[in-house]
Image 1 (tube, helix red, strand yellow):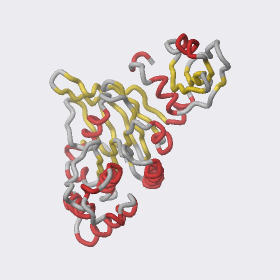
Image 2 (image 1 turned 30 degrees about the vertical axis):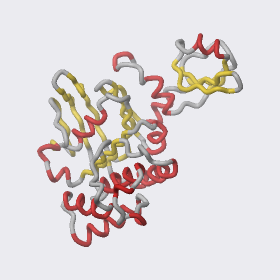
Image 3 (image 1 turned 90 degrees about the vertical axis):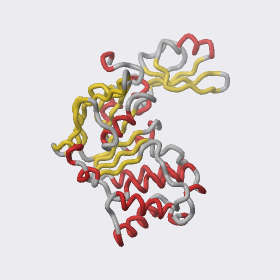
Length: 291
């Protein structure tokens, strides 16, 4: 199974949302990271055939996805960042409607609705109006409709937004179990969610692909470059523009600083095991040609 993007560009009047984006995905979970405006949602909309590239192409197993049409959409599950749910519907009503759009019907559809509602933990409120749901519950309805047709390709844009910690943990476990023989593309601002479930990473900035690769190898490239130190506020003011800061917290009148780069000659520096957050902080501020 292969989903391949080649030279994707998307222009909106004078704005380029995507610029020469290329990558290949096979079975597994891919994390998609990037700041707001990086082009992530535009890319996912094109992969879901909701939007069209100005230039370039996307192919599934060697065939153009836009030429495949319904046969491609039949193996696709998509959850956009912002999606409309008819608030007067119950979850069952909404999933029956979405199932019909996906060409599902009869006993198979009823069984799948029951299964996905159990998976997203909404079975006990499945007949209540969606307008009575919390934000996290509505996100879970969105996840349910995306997986309703047991898709081979699953595209999820900010699926964990609004979920509480337990819901995020359940979602991570579910996605991990689901990923066998599927291509899953997961976009989120919560870097730790990607580190937990994904094997591969695509990082975007200003419409370009900044970096791709196996997460373990990318994180490993930051080894011996991540430090923590304890500084006075004045020392931190002198240091903060000289190193890439990951995070800072107050600690008894001092500043506990996690940073990336050469060891800073102040405070007691302790080398740290790198995380995906460290790696992303290290390259997130650079353009493609500055790496």
